[in-house]
Image (cartoon, rainbow, N blue to C red; front, side, top):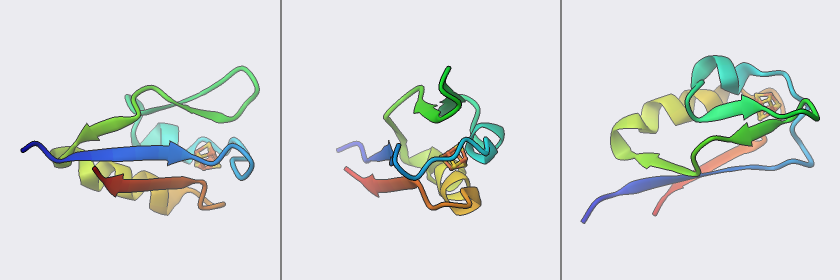
Length: 68
Ligand code: SF4
């Protein structure tokens, strides 16, 4: 079984600081409204640390992730 890490952004919390984009640019992007968007909604477990750092670096705790 392959473990995947599911990622979500809470659009009501995101204020567009862009830290997530700098930390994981192939997972997060800023949309036209200045808020973060997911490029992919899940990644392989080998990229867990990258997603964890992006979530940690978000000043408003808008990024959630979990094993699926
Ligand atoms: S770091 Fe957080 S607040 Fe900033 S763009 Fe990413 S999700 Fe939004």
